[in-house]
Every structure is written in structure tokens, then in C-alpha cells.
Amino acid sequence: MVASQIRGRGIADRRVLAALATVPRHHFVPPSLERSAYDDAPLPVGHGQTISQPYIVALMTAALRPRRHHRVLEIGTGTGYQTAVLAHLVARVHTIERLPALAEAAATRLAGLGYRNVVCRVGDGTLGWPEAGPFDGILVTAAAPAVPAPLLAQLAVGGRAAVPVGDLGLQDLRVVERLPDGYCEWSEGGCRFVPLIGRHGFPEGV
Image (cartoon, rainbow, N blue to C red; front, side, top):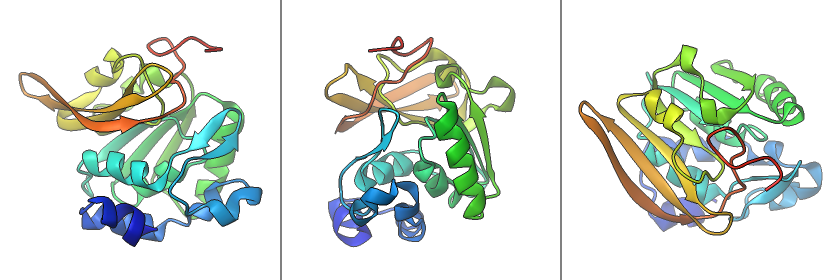
């Protein structure tokens, strides 16, 4: 998976590649899909949600330029796969999931696999986690109509956010870096995610 789908498509960050090679992706998909866990494709995980394809996980992770001392906020825990990848790379991961069943299962799974630097919460991820910020990185695993303003406010100077932005079809992966005097934003290409539901996202039921 790492050699052909990730390194072979231009991801060069050695620490990110090592994390992807280490995390047992088959533990983060439904048992019926374990044989497809390392395919370069998103997979359904229930509750109308998906686990992102490995390449997109690598691309978004690398875009944050994660360092060992960083504190990262993840919006959309899902099954916890992206969370686990981040946990290998940074000091602390705060992750928010709006669906209690997914959040509880992910927290149990991550704890069982030995991840001790992860803090989970159920809530509206578009509001972020103000009391735990600012964050060196913010990664959003669902598509927003625009980069949520509360998340930008919780980004540390020098930090980066990776957010899929667009309608409910094809989106644009936006990376935003906070500078001392503002923000710099650019595109990392097209992507496709489930909608980000919340006050600064899409309404329930879209």
C-alpha cells in the first residue's frame, strides 16, 4: 500500500510514510471489509460515513507538516484510522466526532491498540475545541462549504489546517497556514468526502 499507492504517487515525508506502514488499517474497517482494507479507495464504515482512501490520508497528513511536539485537532474521528496515523506523528491528538456510536467505538479501538496520546470528544466539530487550543495542525475529514471560521481562530501561528471545501460532489482540498499577519491558503487538488455537519458546515439531513 505504502510503496504503490502513497510513495508512488508523490508523498515523500518519511515520517508520514512510516506511520502509514505502521498503523494496522484492517482494524479500522468493518470485519466484512478487512480484505479490502489496504485498497486505494474509501470504504463504508456505517452511519453513512466512510474511511478515507490511504492516499488521501497521507496527503492530508503530510500537508500539516506534523512534528513530534505538535498538538493536532481532528474533526471527524470516524473509526479512528486518521487519528491513529496522527498519533504516531505528534505529541497529542484531540479528535471530535458528532456521532456517539462512532466516537465510542473509535475511543475503545484506539485505547485497545495502545494509543495513549489521543483525547476524544462527541460534539459539533465545526466549533472546534477552543479550551484545548491553539493547535499546530487541524485536519477535517469531511467536506465543508467553507473553511469554518472557529477552526481558523484556533490555529496557532505557523500552524496549518487541511479542509475539504466544496459542494456535495467533488471538493477541493484546501490547506491554510496561519501567518503572524493573516492566513495563506492554497489547493492540494480534488477530493471527495461526506458532508461536514454542524453550525459552520452543512445542515443535518443533506
